[in-house]
Each structure stands twice: as structure tokens, then as C-alpha cells.
Image (tube, rainbow, N blue to C red; front, side):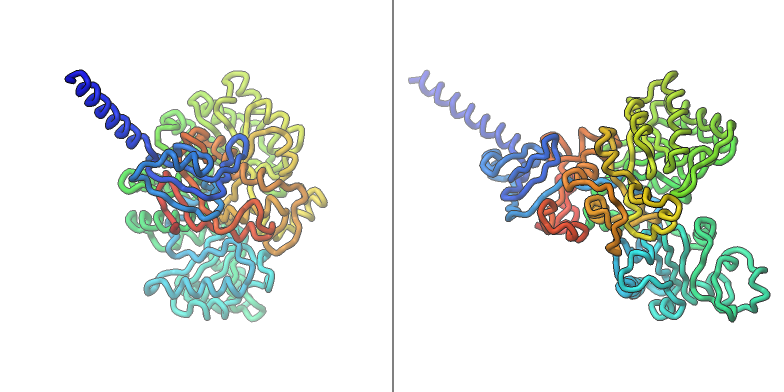
Amino acid sequence: MRSLKFILSALIINSISLISLFAQNAPDQIFTNGKIITVDDYFSIQEAVAIKGQRILAVGNNNEIESLAATNTQRTNLNGKTVIPGLIDNHNHVVRATEYWPNEARLDGITSRAEALQILRVKGDSLGPDEWIMSLGGWSEAQFIDDQRDFTLAELDAVAPDRPLFIQALYHHAYGNTAWFNAMGIPLTIPNEMQLTQNGLASYSVRDAEGKITGRLDGGFPMIELALQSFPAVSADEQIEAIKSSFSHLNSIGLTTVYDPAGVGIRRESYSRLRELAEEEGLTVRIYHTLGGSMPRTPQDAQDLIQEIRESKPFQGNDLVDLIAVGEIYYAPFHWDNTRQPTNPTAEDINWAKKILMAAAEGGWSVQTHATQPETIDHLLNLVAEINELQPVRQLRWSITHADNININQLDRVRHLGMNIQLRSNMVMGGREPIFEAFGGNAYNMPPLRMVQESGVSYGLGTDGTKAAQINPFVTLWWAITGKSLSGEVIQHQVLTREEALIATTRANSLLMFQEQNIGAIKPGLLADMLVLDRDYLTVPVDEIKEIRPVATIVSGKLVYGNL
């Protein structure tokens, strides 16, 4: 009898232990009755997903996932909604934009001039006294279907009669209202004979035949840089709040990860604030970024950068914030070209670029190189080939950023060197006339999406936001699939399928950032970054793709936007 009691007690204890063990290993939450587009290696479609902690525990059919759940597992019925991995922008200068984000009226993807004015008006109504209204890039008049005229001083004064307003169209030109010109000390009317004597920002102001300010400022990048110097100062606390609000916006359009390439005007302390915020409260967008924030142009600049590369280490962060590369600009005379003109570096320029790249290779750094034209890309590949003989770079995943006009022979060299391509969707905003004038029919192949896809080279899609381009990833997907600009004009003949474009904005981009074991797909072991969509990406009419929005955005298993 005592033996029987002992056996029964042991069985009860073991059962309790097994139940306890099951409960410990059961998912914290499950999502069922959905269309889960996993973007795994097979692009499989599943019904349900289980999450344990921050990571995906299992993916499968409803019965399989239900069988894993314990009594305390949180259950969400997706009611047929489509789920995709969190979207990744491989080239977005968002950290630079966080300083003034609370003042920004973003016009990404807006196709109506009238709607743009209304967005500016609503933004002004939401701000405190004397706060500026800004729209710092990401839009162009060419994207408006109803009216592509310049904004007038009278229109902008009507939008914001009592506060400065400054809106920047890409890096090309900008507009201000009367309050802004007054704040800058720029006279609204001057005699025509005095116009040539104007200095600073005033010299970029466009005036009519009577010498009156029209509201427009020309001058491109130099004008923008000068204007930024007069912007209101932003405190550390203000920027931390701006980071939160900007990341919330990114979550609302489906972004969960950004590869931030620093850029001119970035303040290094912005990345320190990101790290502080990540440690104290967490972040809702993962930021992997480069070492930079300036535009090295001189031998002294090159020496300073080489020293910084040697004194710094990549990959010391975590899955929320990490410094992983050098670039996208590391020696401007060597590689910083534009969509119409290549660089023409001297032997000295090439020598300094080689020293920088060698220091990066020796230090185990990945490198981004801004290069768009074939001549510039050849200079780069020649140099990388030389360095590769001395210090192999394949494992460092160096990349060519933009590569708008890359050719098939260069793609072969890229593949041989183990490099990657970061393509961008900035042309979706339209205004491509100068490119067609420069390249004729070949402009329809810039960038050559289909050729890159079929080359087998590792590549991904990004935007080049927030100033030089719009930042909505669904607009990028729509452009890559349809070849259209926002105005409806076909500007791209080389396009991708829906599956290819989604891979290029998720799994492929994770590889560029050394994060393929963390993000980019919905499969066991990866971090639970997912979007629950308001419509089915794979089946909606193609022109609706740019209108897709998440009803819920999940990062590391936590709901960070929307509701379910």
C-alpha cells in the first residue's frame, strides 16, 4: 500500500512539474485566424503566430498554435486580417529629423496641393504661441495632381498669419511666409537695383518685377544649410520628446527599423539621446546607424575620420540601437556625386579614400558609399578590389548606396566582392524631367530594379528620407511594383513583383544590417516585429498599395501603435 501511495504521489508531483514546465514554455500571446505573410525563405502563408517574450515562438495553422497556449496566454483573433513583418527602411536620415519633428507638417505621399495647405494650417493650429511651422523636405510640387504651381506668400500668410513658416521642397528650394522673412530680417520689398547687394539668406530670396518677396527661396543645398543655422534651438529634453513623437509616426506608417546614415547637419549627441532613451524607456523603432555627421572634403578631414574609425568600434550596441558602419559620405571629392553628374576624383582624392577604406576594413567596419553614376561606381569598385587583396571585405557587407545608374558589368563585380546595393524610391515624387533630359529613355531604368533583382546581388529598398525623399514604406512598395510617380505618371519600366518588393523591404534589408537573426521575417526565433494591416497587401488593387496602413504595429511583441 505504501508503495502504491508513493507511486501515486510521484505521478502527481511529476504531473504538476510537467504542467508547470508547460506553462513556463507556453506562449505569452497568440494571434490566430489571420493571413500571416511570413516572408520566410519560402514566402509561406500561415494562419497563426505565437510569441514568447520578445520573440516568435512558433508559426503555423490555428490548431497548431492553439495547442501551445496555456490558460494565461493572451489570445487575439485577427478575424482574417493580413500580417506582415515590420518594414525596414535601409536609408532614412530620421535621427537628424527628430530635432524639429513636433513642428513638422509632413507631406509624404500627398497628391493634392490643397490638402498640403490644409495640413500646414492644421499643424499651425496645434502649436503653441510663436512656434514655427516646418515641412523639412520629403515632398515636391511635382507630386501634386491638382496644381503644381509655387506656393505664394499670400497663401502661406493665410495658413500662418502670426507665426514663422518654412517649408523645404527636397533640397532644391523652399518657401517662407511674412513672419519668417521678418524673423530673418529680410526686407519684403527692395528696389530692383539693390537686389544684387543682398547677402546671406536674403540673396536667395525670389522677388517679382517690383522687388517684392514672392515667398520662394532658391539656392538648393547651400540655401538650406544657411537657413538651418537660424532655426530655433532645441534642448535635450525637447529632442527626447521629439524622438518619441517621430518614432510613433514611423510606427503609424509601418516602419519598425531604420538604417540611419547620419548625414550633414546631424548632431552626434542625438545618438547619445537615443541610447539613453532606449535604456530608460525602450524604443519603438530600431535604429542602426553609421559613424558620421559631416562631409569630409580635405586631407585634414580624412585624417580626422581615420583617427575616429581607429578609436571607435562597431557592433557594441544592442538590438534597439547600434553603430554598425562608416558612411554614407566619408570623402566627398571621391564619391559624392548626384543623379546627373559623376565625380572626377584626383589621384590624391583616391589616395585619401583608400586610406579611409583601409582603416575601415582593418577595424572590421561595414561601409556605405553614396554613388549613383557608373563612373563614380567604377572608381569605388576599383578601390574596393585593391583593398580586398590586402584585407578581405566580403564578411563586412560593404554597400553602394543609391546606385541609381549601375550597369550589369558592375553588378558582376559587386557580387564578386560580396557587396550589397541599397536602392531608393525618391523618384516616386516625380519631377524627373532633368533626368530624362540627361539620360533619355534610360531614365526609365533608373534604378534598374529588375536587373538588380535578377543579378543575384544582395539588395534592399529604402527611401533616402526624410528631406531628400518621402518616407512612407507603402509608397515605396507601390512605386517598385507599378513604376509610377505620385502624380500617376509612369517613370519606371523595371519593376518588381509584390513578393519581391516585400522581401526587399524586410528580409533583404535585415541582411544589410547584420540583423537576419533578429528581424525581417515572421519565423521562430526572430524578434516579434509585425504589422497587422487594414487590407491584404497581396490581393488589393495595385494602386491601393500606397494607401495601406497598419491597424496595429508590434515591436518585440509589444503593441506600439493602434489596437486589436
